[in-house]
Length: 466
Ligand code: SAH
Ligand code: SF4
Ligand code: F3S
Image 1: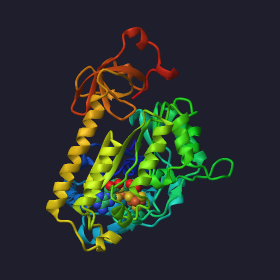
Image 2 (image 1 turned 180 degrees about the vertical axis):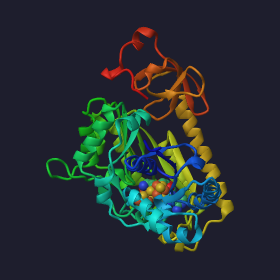
Image 3 (image 1 turned 60 degrees about the vertical axis):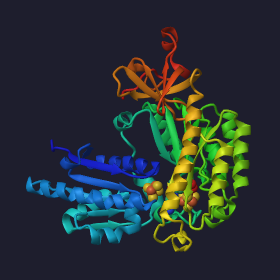
Image 4 (image 1 turned 120 degrees about the vertical axis):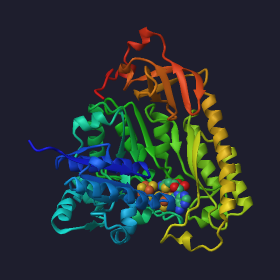
């Protein structure tokens, strides 16, 4: 028997990259590769990169510097280490990587990674390889399914890509250039993926896409299905206990999605709905195609369908020309909506995007100051939201052993981590937890007394082979 080759893969950026990294592992497993957590001993190291902000993409070059040392050391030991750069930096700066980093053997864009085996062969036989084409449908067809063991080793929560790419062209954003035009996967393929995951112990499915609620995949009836209809169909697959989706755009919230939140207990009442700014002039300059009021109305529609719904969002501070007054409109919007969590970023000009050409830049000091104020407000809302759970009993889906011995950690409907002392056979089950306290962002609670524990929650299998 030949010894398996070792693969180390490091992912940056969004959930789509996490998903893609797993697909790369599945693709290379067919070639006899097994994953290793240690880059130094790998035969192939893949950096799955993110180009969204300057900081994210610059990380690649510092990481490549470290890998060059590991590659030289491997060569001294008589081993060959190949280095691949995948993901959105590969797509945006493929040629530059080839010039700047001679240590890189393969550059592969996010739509081409199903060709990794051929690219690896090419790199071995003929030298460095670059592929950044957009044969996206082709990728959806040819990426192999994960083996049952691989699914089980990845735990009880899984991402499933349903849509990829974006046609929105927000003026600050690289995604339409790195991920290409919007494409939806057919309903039947998604049902197959989710069924397979659920059969192998996955309890929570997060449907992902750069613009997930623009989903319009072909249904079994030959019609384009909206996301809400897809969610209704997936909710009846045995074993699927929780459904989520991310990231949605405020412009694409149709009635099917609102109805899904009204009708499906499995669809978690926690929606990530980025708004970016609370000022209409900035929203227009960002090409977000909605006003602050339109966003508020979308939030109201969700809230009228499900009272316990909570929201998270993304914000950019210091977009070119943002005045103090406009920034205050963002603070006002946050105050009015009341978020359970949110991410906020300083604007970062990205090469090739329209906003990078805008001249009225906001100074670094002002950006820092605004980011500080926004984060303080968001933190206070998040803390209040978490504190409100103390004393209540909430459903928790248990995921894995926690760092503290004897503790198991899971997540609430709102993705808050919740810790309890319990036996590990509760992993994969949803159980009510009485929340007693809060430690930073984690809820600490207790399970009900043992007789209840003996009853599997929602008729789900009691254990999974993690
Ligand atoms: N598709 C999602 C977001 C994708 S990128 C949406 O439509 O909202 C994730 C987040 O990164 C964005 O929501 C935005 O807040 C942030 N972001 C994107 N480009 C950025 C840039 N050039 N500078 C700073 N933040 C940026
Ligand atoms: Fe980027 Fe805008 Fe598309 Fe989101 S909707 S991925 S921010 S272009
Ligand atoms: Fe980054 Fe590409 Fe995702 S730029 S955020 S990895 S789509």
